[in-house]
Picture 1 (cartoon, helix red, strand yellow):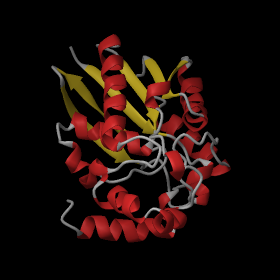
Picture 2 (picture 1 turned 45 degrees about the horizontal axis):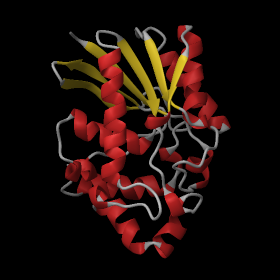
Picture 3 (picture 1 turned 180 degrees about the vertical axis):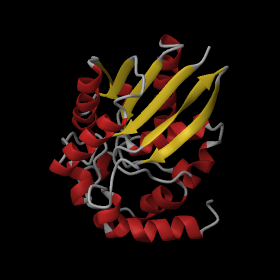
Picture 4 (picture 1 turned 90 degrees about the vertical axis):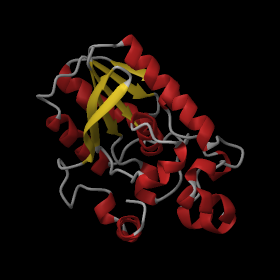
Length: 228
């Protein structure tokens, strides 16, 4: 039985805009985020969706509401689809993290499979939480067109599982922009990816990444490295 799975990253949230780490820090989306959410809802308007799940956090629920309104569907919130618990990282800027937690920052950037948030989740435990939640949804909604609104790190660890890659390969999976769409078909416990991290519904002005300096350094490092 074929099950369609569409995964959407939440729209630009406060943490994305001000470049603070917000895992379980529960802020909503920005004005740009509202525009992004409207754009992705328009993009998905003619795509069949039977059920909508979302991380229970404000930024994902607010994004999901735009899609749900166009589909006239309810949103099913799931706590286990929340972003990684950052522990002591919560609310710190990325510059502060590099200064205060150099070892942990290095694993986050270069060996994420080994990462342990100070007083928060490990990447391994986090992946187990996410995969368990998504597999439960796939089982309960078999044969349907499922849409899940969730978070950036969630998508990366989930793609490791869906691509049948070990968590060590997570470093090879790039970050996707806010409201990026990943979609494919789940059948016989295998996932066939059709679209990954696509944000063609955004232009340069409405993109989050293309308006932040870090992204251009990251893109150069990622695509010039042996990660791909």
